[in-house]
Image (tube, rainbow, N blue to C red):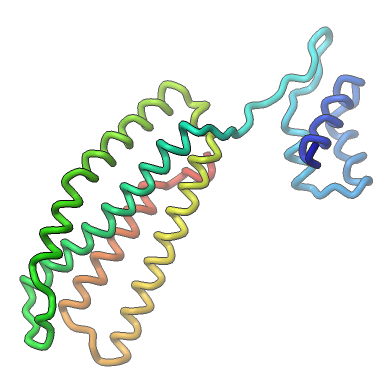
Length: 205
Protein backbone atom coordinates (compact mmCIF):
# COMPACT_ATOMS: atom_id res chain seq x y z
CA UNK A 1 0.00 0.00 0.00
CA UNK A 2 1.40 3.38 -0.98
CA UNK A 3 1.63 6.36 1.35
CA UNK A 4 -1.26 8.07 -0.44
CA UNK A 5 -3.55 5.07 0.06
CA UNK A 6 -2.43 4.76 3.68
CA UNK A 7 -3.21 8.42 4.29
CA UNK A 8 -6.62 8.26 2.65
CA UNK A 9 -7.53 5.13 4.63
CA UNK A 10 -6.59 6.91 7.84
CA UNK A 11 -8.77 9.89 6.94
CA UNK A 12 -11.70 7.59 6.15
CA UNK A 13 -11.36 5.72 9.46
CA UNK A 14 -11.07 9.00 11.36
CA UNK A 15 -14.23 10.32 9.71
CA UNK A 16 -16.08 7.10 10.53
CA UNK A 17 -14.95 7.54 14.15
CA UNK A 18 -16.62 10.96 14.17
CA UNK A 19 -13.55 13.18 13.93
CA UNK A 20 -13.83 16.51 12.13
CA UNK A 21 -11.69 17.34 9.11
CA UNK A 22 -9.90 20.14 10.96
CA UNK A 23 -8.91 17.81 13.80
CA UNK A 24 -7.72 15.21 11.28
CA UNK A 25 -5.62 17.81 9.47
CA UNK A 26 -3.99 18.90 12.73
CA UNK A 27 -3.17 15.30 13.66
CA UNK A 28 -1.64 14.63 10.25
CA UNK A 29 0.41 17.84 10.39
CA UNK A 30 1.74 16.85 13.81
CA UNK A 31 2.74 13.49 12.31
CA UNK A 32 4.85 15.23 9.66
CA UNK A 33 2.63 15.10 6.57
CA UNK A 34 2.91 18.06 4.21
CA UNK A 35 0.11 20.57 3.72
CA UNK A 36 -0.49 19.39 0.15
CA UNK A 37 -0.69 15.73 1.19
CA UNK A 38 -3.09 16.58 4.00
CA UNK A 39 -5.28 18.71 1.75
CA UNK A 40 -5.50 16.02 -0.93
CA UNK A 41 -6.26 13.25 1.57
CA UNK A 42 -8.88 15.17 3.54
CA UNK A 43 -10.60 16.37 0.37
CA UNK A 44 -10.82 12.79 -0.89
CA UNK A 45 -13.83 12.19 1.37
CA UNK A 46 -17.00 13.95 2.42
CA UNK A 47 -17.80 14.10 6.10
CA UNK A 48 -19.59 11.07 7.53
CA UNK A 49 -23.33 11.54 8.05
CA UNK A 50 -25.45 9.56 10.54
CA UNK A 51 -26.09 6.15 9.02
CA UNK A 52 -23.86 6.92 6.03
CA UNK A 53 -20.11 6.23 5.74
CA UNK A 54 -17.76 8.85 4.25
CA UNK A 55 -18.39 9.23 0.53
CA UNK A 56 -15.29 9.33 -1.72
CA UNK A 57 -14.90 12.23 -4.10
CA UNK A 58 -14.24 11.46 -7.79
CA UNK A 59 -10.60 10.67 -8.52
CA UNK A 60 -8.40 10.66 -11.63
CA UNK A 61 -8.15 7.32 -13.40
CA UNK A 62 -6.05 5.53 -16.03
CA UNK A 63 -7.39 3.36 -18.85
CA UNK A 64 -5.81 1.58 -21.81
CA UNK A 65 -8.53 2.89 -24.12
CA UNK A 66 -7.64 6.46 -23.22
CA UNK A 67 -3.96 5.73 -23.83
CA UNK A 68 -4.76 4.67 -27.40
CA UNK A 69 -7.22 7.50 -28.04
CA UNK A 70 -5.13 10.34 -26.63
CA UNK A 71 -1.92 8.82 -27.96
CA UNK A 72 -3.31 8.90 -31.49
CA UNK A 73 -4.54 12.45 -30.94
CA UNK A 74 -1.10 13.53 -29.69
CA UNK A 75 0.72 11.89 -32.61
CA UNK A 76 -1.68 13.26 -35.21
CA UNK A 77 -1.41 16.77 -33.76
CA UNK A 78 2.40 16.59 -33.76
CA UNK A 79 2.43 15.35 -37.37
CA UNK A 80 0.01 18.09 -38.42
CA UNK A 81 2.06 20.84 -36.77
CA UNK A 82 5.30 19.62 -38.33
CA UNK A 83 4.02 19.19 -41.87
CA UNK A 84 1.86 22.33 -41.86
CA UNK A 85 5.01 24.25 -41.00
CA UNK A 86 6.98 22.39 -43.67
CA UNK A 87 4.29 23.21 -46.22
CA UNK A 88 4.20 26.81 -45.05
CA UNK A 89 7.98 27.07 -45.32
CA UNK A 90 7.77 25.81 -48.89
CA UNK A 91 5.12 28.36 -49.80
CA UNK A 92 7.18 31.13 -48.22
CA UNK A 93 10.27 29.96 -50.12
CA UNK A 94 8.26 30.07 -53.35
CA UNK A 95 6.75 33.51 -52.72
CA UNK A 96 9.83 35.18 -51.25
CA UNK A 97 12.79 34.51 -53.53
CA UNK A 98 16.28 34.20 -52.09
CA UNK A 99 19.04 33.78 -54.66
CA UNK A 100 21.38 32.56 -51.93
CA UNK A 101 19.12 29.62 -51.03
CA UNK A 102 17.85 27.36 -53.80
CA UNK A 103 18.56 24.03 -52.15
CA UNK A 104 15.00 22.93 -51.45
CA UNK A 105 12.92 21.35 -54.14
CA UNK A 106 9.21 20.59 -54.37
CA UNK A 107 9.40 16.90 -53.41
CA UNK A 108 9.20 17.62 -49.68
CA UNK A 109 6.09 19.73 -50.32
CA UNK A 110 4.40 16.80 -52.02
CA UNK A 111 5.36 14.58 -49.09
CA UNK A 112 3.88 17.05 -46.57
CA UNK A 113 0.64 17.22 -48.55
CA UNK A 114 0.54 13.42 -48.75
CA UNK A 115 0.96 13.15 -44.97
CA UNK A 116 -1.68 15.79 -44.24
CA UNK A 117 -4.31 14.01 -46.34
CA UNK A 118 -4.81 11.10 -43.85
CA UNK A 119 -3.68 12.79 -40.63
CA UNK A 120 -5.91 15.87 -40.81
CA UNK A 121 -9.15 13.83 -40.99
CA UNK A 122 -7.82 11.51 -38.28
CA UNK A 123 -7.17 14.44 -35.96
CA UNK A 124 -10.59 15.99 -36.63
CA UNK A 125 -12.39 12.69 -36.03
CA UNK A 126 -10.52 12.03 -32.78
CA UNK A 127 -11.03 15.59 -31.57
CA UNK A 128 -14.75 15.40 -32.29
CA UNK A 129 -15.06 12.04 -30.57
CA UNK A 130 -13.24 13.20 -27.45
CA UNK A 131 -15.30 16.39 -27.30
CA UNK A 132 -18.54 14.41 -27.57
CA UNK A 133 -17.46 11.85 -24.96
CA UNK A 134 -16.37 14.44 -22.40
CA UNK A 135 -19.53 16.45 -22.95
CA UNK A 136 -21.77 13.42 -22.41
CA UNK A 137 -19.66 12.09 -19.52
CA UNK A 138 -17.71 14.88 -17.76
CA UNK A 139 -16.04 12.23 -15.59
CA UNK A 140 -13.82 11.32 -18.54
CA UNK A 141 -12.09 14.68 -18.17
CA UNK A 142 -10.42 13.24 -15.06
CA UNK A 143 -8.37 10.82 -17.16
CA UNK A 144 -4.72 10.94 -16.07
CA UNK A 145 -3.68 9.84 -19.57
CA UNK A 146 -5.48 12.87 -20.98
CA UNK A 147 -3.69 15.20 -18.57
CA UNK A 148 -0.28 13.65 -19.24
CA UNK A 149 -0.57 13.98 -22.99
CA UNK A 150 -1.88 17.53 -22.60
CA UNK A 151 1.08 18.37 -20.34
CA UNK A 152 3.61 16.93 -22.81
CA UNK A 153 1.99 18.80 -25.69
CA UNK A 154 2.02 22.09 -23.79
CA UNK A 155 5.66 21.55 -22.84
CA UNK A 156 6.65 20.95 -26.47
CA UNK A 157 4.65 23.98 -27.62
CA UNK A 158 6.37 26.23 -25.08
CA UNK A 159 9.80 24.85 -26.04
CA UNK A 160 9.01 25.49 -29.72
CA UNK A 161 8.03 29.09 -28.95
CA UNK A 162 11.18 29.63 -26.90
CA UNK A 163 13.34 28.13 -29.64
CA UNK A 164 11.59 30.25 -32.26
CA UNK A 165 12.16 33.40 -30.23
CA UNK A 166 15.81 32.52 -29.59
CA UNK A 167 16.41 31.88 -33.29
CA UNK A 168 14.81 35.22 -34.15
CA UNK A 169 17.01 37.07 -31.66
CA UNK A 170 20.10 35.30 -33.02
CA UNK A 171 19.15 36.17 -36.60
CA UNK A 172 18.62 39.80 -35.63
CA UNK A 173 22.00 39.99 -33.88
CA UNK A 174 23.69 38.32 -36.86
CA UNK A 175 22.09 40.61 -39.41
CA UNK A 176 20.23 37.69 -41.03
CA UNK A 177 16.68 38.76 -40.20
CA UNK A 178 15.28 38.56 -43.72
CA UNK A 179 11.63 38.75 -44.74
CA UNK A 180 11.67 35.02 -45.44
CA UNK A 181 13.02 34.28 -41.96
CA UNK A 182 10.47 36.59 -40.30
CA UNK A 183 7.57 34.90 -42.08
CA UNK A 184 8.79 31.44 -41.09
CA UNK A 185 9.31 32.51 -37.49
CA UNK A 186 5.78 33.95 -37.41
CA UNK A 187 4.39 30.69 -38.78
CA UNK A 188 6.10 28.68 -36.04
CA UNK A 189 4.91 31.14 -33.39
CA UNK A 190 1.31 31.02 -34.63
CA UNK A 191 1.38 27.22 -34.65
CA UNK A 192 2.71 27.10 -31.09
CA UNK A 193 0.13 29.61 -29.86
CA UNK A 194 -2.70 27.67 -31.52
CA UNK A 195 -1.57 24.51 -29.74
CA UNK A 196 -1.46 26.37 -26.43
CA UNK A 197 -4.96 27.67 -27.09
CA UNK A 198 -6.22 24.21 -28.05
CA UNK A 199 -5.08 22.75 -24.73
CA UNK A 200 -6.08 25.76 -22.64
CA UNK A 201 -7.52 24.66 -19.33
CA UNK A 202 -6.64 20.98 -19.80
CA UNK A 203 -4.24 20.87 -16.87
CA UNK A 204 -6.62 22.45 -14.36
CA UNK A 205 -9.72 20.41 -15.25
